[in-house]
Image: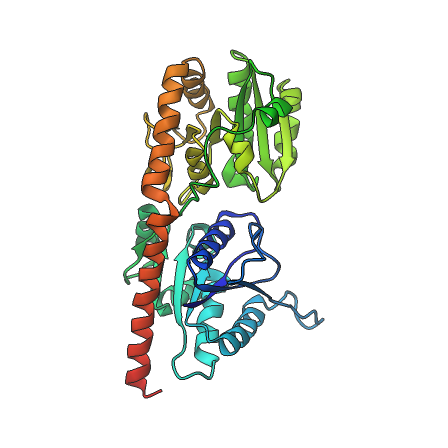
Length: 385
């Protein structure tokens, strides 16, 4: 199958998921064309014979206050469709990708236009989509897609309730590569960040306000007041300076390492003891899933789709948003009891592989593609194309 994937190329969850799914499908023999403004953050397998990248270019013109992203993306996508016989367009994120996909589908000159599958990831609905400037466009893009999926039951329900969407939304959870994300990391690498007697906590995000990175620092400060510990802050974003300043203010700056963003985080997760995710909102929690696959229990907020990933009292603990004292107590419960920690770590790994492995999730996307293709062929037949 020839598949075009539209995605955000940065380090955010939707782009990471889109890249991992696309590369996974390429490994199965499908041809995947990534279409984005720059090479996707996680696209480290550019030498794969079935993976191609097509760059969307923008025009700078004084008449326009901002780049016309949707139009340039639709134009590039139309070229890719006609030159490569693309059968399915997979748009990850409603705006601008689903809108561009629908526009390209309608403008191409081919006997049967490609099917459009749109995956909703979270803020494309909960934040951008509900803004008055984009509401009608988001609704239109969702309704006009051939098949729509969401990464969690929470997000599917939210889309129906808050956006007034009536159509069916299939739930296809995010996947994790259980071979890439696995326990038992390098002892040498661990010694680079922590002494043998210290525990290592980790947080991964894009450091936006919704991730509540200052709560990560508050939680760690309480934990490290009772046990020897270090904290890895992986990622970058607007709230990084706040987290850095708070760590210094609370006297833990010397035990917190800000490592920045990079695509291969599996080695760092594999040497971690706990993963912290105190977000105020998460439609799924991909970082938590990757930690679980690495055999790392998760301390997270009980919000959004996180409870569909992290099982409270089995693979980690869930607390109220903002309850840093509760998160610290939960973390200490595991860090002070090696037997309990080991049980949680094993269960986390087992759940990640059993429920969210690529072997479980990729067939769900392929079924969605086939369903969308059938719908497109049927519509083309009725229209006489």
